[in-house]
Image 1 (tube, rainbow, N blue to C red):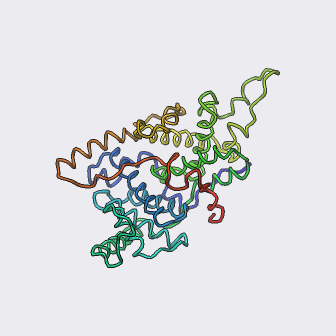
Image 2 (cartoon, rainbow, N blue to C red):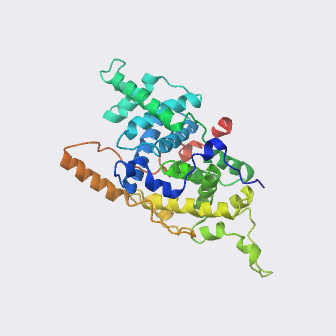
Image 3 (cartoon, rainbow, N blue to C red):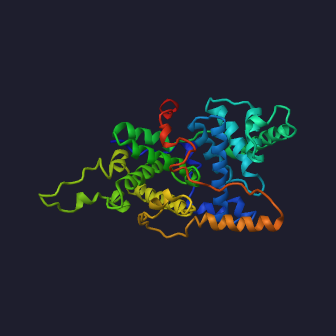
Length: 354
């Protein structure tokens, strides 16, 4: 059994309270509602992922860049720094720290291609606006370095999931589901709210429930303290469910009661995020979004509202203004093609990158 890890001093400075999300610069200086900020953050990370896939970057670089993206917007407003330029700067910096270097011109080409809806192959080296994109990345990178205080350390929930997968030989379906959920958490600010191990455990527990079905133990049972089987008498004819089954992650990491409260909060936020998606289009998310969340000790307003409503309102505003960025919405990766899709078994490279 492992022991609960304490975040390093470097990473712990980036662990904030959930209430801090209501006091970001986007809200305090730009009057951007929280639900709109979270929607644009999700869109920004989706854009970052698409750029990263086009650049053929490893998942470690994509997740690191996504974490920096969220850290950046805890200190700067979406109004002052466009999410696409910040995403590109985060990726460019991550190619250096994760030792998967890409030339500035190549990153700028992909940024340009994704922005103007062209293929990268259609953009020549002497493209008229390419230098402008390069300069935008470099200028944003300077602000990014200042926002990060040159602290590049990122703890990944994927590395913790690999640890779980190594200890317990789960089905490929469960591993792939947990991995996809971990990818999806990068679209949320969970990485600046909770340690990677807490996030990983929540992803694993939710994946277990998704795979085992609605008749399996509830999320409340899976994270109860103490374990229900330890406090309730069991008839001789009944077989006790071992901890390595529905409570494997809890037992493996040796979580205490404070950790379990955090896991409950993470599960609530993940399920809120899924429920905010366009469930008519993303039908595969319906069963996940309908899972009852675990009870939490403190009440708070929901962080997420329907993305389709926000998107419709945005389109109406842009139509009235005569244009604007009309591209995309923050689709979930669960079952989709960005990054580390189930068919790719995308968690394996993390073994080498730590």
